[in-house]
Image (cartoon, rainbow, N blue to C red; front, side, top):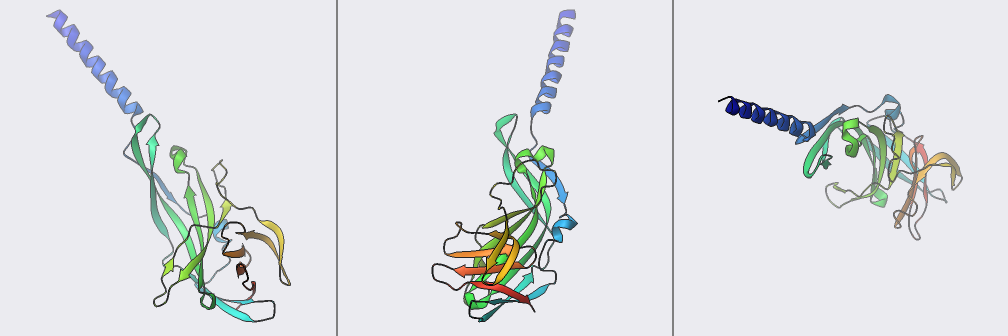
Length: 231
C-alpha cells in the first residue's frame, strides 16, 4: 500500500512539474501590445494644420496649378496585427496586435491626375513585441492615381519613410530616408528635404515638414512644379 501511495505522489509531482514547465515556455495565441498615441511633437511636424488646405504650385515659366490637402476624417485609432513565431516553439504562431493613433492627409492635384498621401502613425516593433518597442513614423505615398468618375485612390507602397521620433525603439528603421540639408527647386531653396529619387522612376517628388509636398515632376520629360504658397 505504501509503495502505491509513494508512486502516486511521485506521478502527481511529475505531472505538476511538467505542467508548470509547459506553461512557462508556451506562448499565448494572441499578444496585445496596447494602445499608443502619437507624440505631440510628432503631430506638430504635420505641415497641414487645417481640415482642408489649398496649395499652389508653379513651373519654370510661371504657370500655376492647384492642389488640395484634405485630412482623413475620422483620424484616430486603428487596430493592426501580424503573425510572429513563438520564441520557444517555432511551430506556433502568435497574433501580435496593437491599437495605434494615426493622422493622414490626401494631397490631390487633379490637373496632373495625382494624389499623394501623407500619413503619420505610431509603428510598433512586432518582432520584439514583449519589449514594447515603438516609434513614430511618417510616410509619403505617391502616386495614388485618381481614376475617372468617383475619386477612387489606388495606393502604392510608401516611397518616403521618415522617422518622426525613435521613442524607445533602439533599432534602425528599415528603409527610412535621410533628408538633404538644402535643395534648390527652380528659384526656391528648401531645407530638410526628403526625396524619392531612384525609387519611383516615373515620377520624382520632394517633401519637407515646413510645407509638405514641395515639388514633383513626371519623368522623363515632365515639367517640374514647385510649391509656391498656401491659399
